[in-house]
Length: 462
Ligand SMILES: Cc1ncc(COP(=O)(O)O)c(C=O)c1O
Image (cartoon, rainbow, N blue to C red; front, side, top):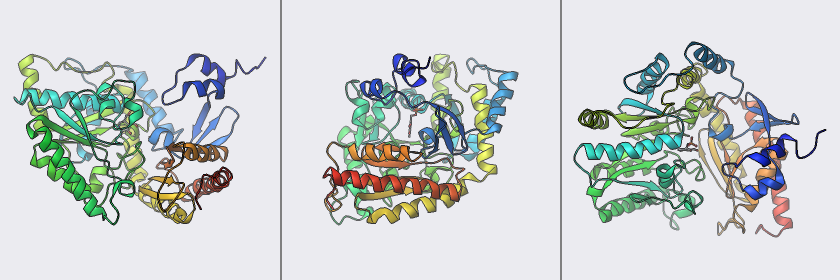
C-alpha cells in the first residue's frame, strides 16, 4: 500500500541529508523527486514537466537525454571502465581530452590536472599555488585573494575562497591565508553617480591597497569567476578585469580563472576569460565540461607553474597529490563527446543568439514594480527583486519574496534558482527560440503572482 512514509519523497527524508537544504523544512516538505529528463525538460514522479531553467546546477549544457553522451560512457565502460593516472599510467580519453582542453583554453596553458568536482579543482589550485611558491623558494608568498560573493566550492580550502557567509558560518572557515576583496556589483556597491569605469578603478585600487597592506611578498594568487555565478550572477563593470589583472601583474600575483560556470559557451564566448581578455595562470573547469553527465573537473596551468612543480616533484621523488578518480576514463570520454557536441551544434553561437532574447525580454521587466535590476550576459542572467526601487531596499526576511517567486515558477513548470531575492537563469545551451520564450512566459506569470502576493503582504513599495 502506498503511504506517505513509503513514497520516494519521504523515504528520502528518512535517509538523506541534502546539500544546501534546511533539513527541518525538508522533513516537513519531503523531496521533489525528479525521474527523467529530455532536452531542456525534466519530469517529476507525477509526470509533471519542468523547463530546467538553471540547467540542473548551471551545468547541463547539451540538455538531458543526449544519447551520444550515454553511448560515449557505455562504450568506455565496456572497454576500460576504470584506470588511474598515478605512477606514469594513462589512458586514451584523458590524453585526448587534455590535448583538446589545452587547444581551446584561454591563456597559454601547458598541462591539465584532473579532479571530479569544482571544489576539488579549486582545492588543488590552492595546493599548487603553495607547492609552486615553496618550489621556487618563496615560502612566504602564500595568501590567496578571493572576492566577497565569489563562489569556488565548499571543501576546506575552496570553501574558504568562497565569499558567502553561509559557506563559512559554523564551519570554522575561512582558513588562514585566504582573504576577500570587494564584490564588483555596480548596482549594489557603486557610489551615487559613479560610472562603471570609476567603480572598476576603485575596486582595483582596493585590491592594490590590500596587497600592499598584507605585503606583496606574502600574496600569491587572486581567484575570480569572470562572471560571478552562485553569488548572484554578477557581471563585472566595464574595464574591471583589465584593471584587476594589472594590479595582480604588478605584484607578481597569479591569476586563477574559475570557469566552472562560465566555461564552454555560457557567456556567448567559449570561456568567460575570452569575453573579458583575462590571461590566467590557471583555469578551473567543470560542470559543462561533461554537461554533468559524469563528475569531472580540470585544473589547467601555464608552463611557468608546471616547470616549478615538475622540478619539485623531481626533488621530492613524486607529486604527493592525486585522486583515485583523477581523469576517470568514462568521465573524460564523456567530456570529449560533450565538447564535440558543443562544437558541432555551435552551442556557443546559440548561447549568444538565445541570450539576446533572454537578456532583452528580462530587461523589459525593468518597469515591473518588483524588479530592481536585471543583469547577465549571454545565457546567464538574474532578476533582482526589491521592495523599493528608489532605495533598492530588499525584503524582510531576505529571500522571502525570491523564494515565493521561485515556488510560483515551479508551479508553472519552470525550475530556476533563487539567490536571496534574485532569480537566476542559466538554461541548457541547446534551448531554441520558442522554448526560451516559453521559459520567459512562465517566469512572467510567476512574477505577476509574486507582485500580487507581495502587495497583499504589504511588502512592495509601489
Ligand atoms: C564557479 C564555481 N566554482 C566552483 C564550484 C564548485 O563546484 P562543485 O559543486 O562541483 O564542487 C562551483 C559550483 O557551483 C562554481 O559555480
